[in-house]
Length: 131
View 1 (cartoon, helix red, strand yellow):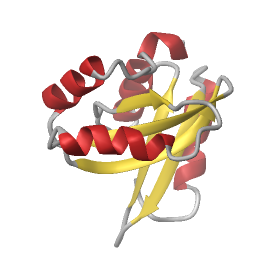
View 2 (view 1 turned 45 degrees about the horizontal axis):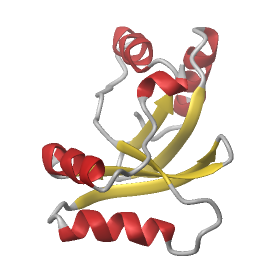
View 3 (view 1 turned 180 degrees about the vertical axis):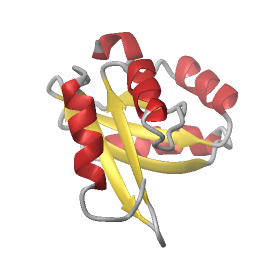
């Protein structure tokens, strides 16, 4: 979105006014524009709403993995498993949800990441859980 005063407020108001709840979001500043990443309760609705208002939007596959509660190094274990499988992490952020730490990962190879998640029986959040 545009890197100017009021742009974020416009997006947040649109989401609110259309009953879309944000679970977590991040905002990154680049030269001339911002990248606003959102995990919400209705991805398709949010995407269509933003596109209809001529706001650049894409849907990106990410993995939201639940971390072992209060275990130091839990995020490192997740990253280690993906690294050993030769999955490159493009970006990562974390938050608390339902009493659990959650790490969100965008990776370079979704098929290999999904295989790694399944083989290691990693506990992940599905989109349906957010609705």
